[in-house]
Picture 1 (cartoon, rainbow, N blue to C red):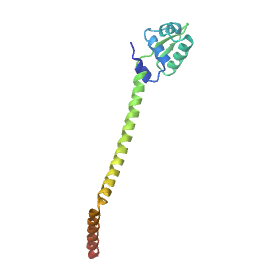
Picture 2 (picture 1 turned 120 degrees about the vertical axis):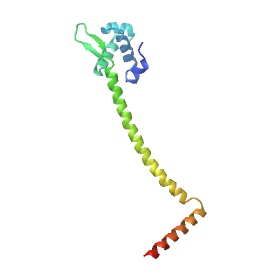
Picture 3 (picture 1 turned 90 degrees about the vertical axis):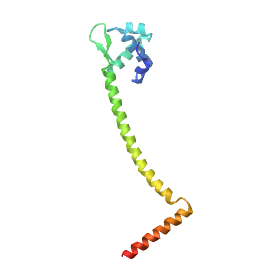
Picture 4 (picture 1 turned 90 degrees about the horizontal axis):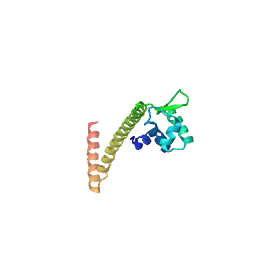
Length: 139
């Protein structure tokens, strides 16, 4: 039995999932056979088969009456690779954001230390005055 949650995670609707599961039990099948097994209305089965074929999940065989078959797992693997690529790109962007925020956090931490309490402000101003005096004496 195929995991319907998996199929839905690849964008299949409820009817498409039922049609795909039913079709997977045949090597190839007519829409009427799929409708009977899937319990999806016959007019909806054909619509689902067309959509699934457009997305590469099933193939329409060139026979009369028209039959369909599942195409295998390659389309799933291709979509999975695409999603992995998208996740890797998102990961890079999150890392860049983290670095930017970490650098900003360091700046904010330095500022917070300088402004922390009256006594530290006076000490910092005294130290700056000493530094300025030393610089003036060098000139």
